[in-house]
Length: 186
Image (cartoon, rainbow, N blue to C red; front, top):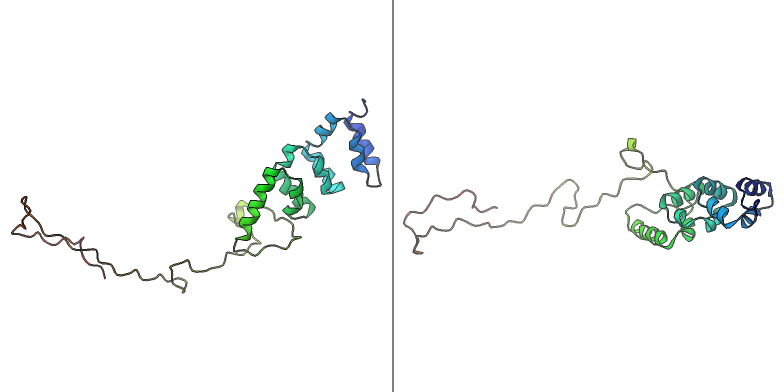
């Protein structure tokens, strides 16, 4: 039992396996050691690079729900994010699938299915990713089709000043001068 709970012993045994049965070694480790190993980010990253994405089946729930971690695993493996969806927690999977729906509505063309994740944009690039083209220039609804021109506003009649009345409601004798704010716009 003490060897099954010894991290150094289990890792040494796993390193000695050459026929692809590395994952089987971890089945013989104690439950406590397995939880410890598969909660260790560095260990999981190294195991995924050695054995593939299937290692993510054993990863702790904390790591399975960590979007940054899952994106990093996909990027390191040269896989699209969709390759790790099956291993994410249901809540992260739903969130990522929601992002996919938003991405489908994007004006940018979709990347090839086997394209690796790009590195995040740096501060020196102004937050713009250097590999992404600018969005297409299309006129907004209600604007002119010629770029750089604005449509003419419709002619509206704002009105004129109402005639002055006395306290009895009858029109007063002297009308005030016209207020320049109340004029007709053409």
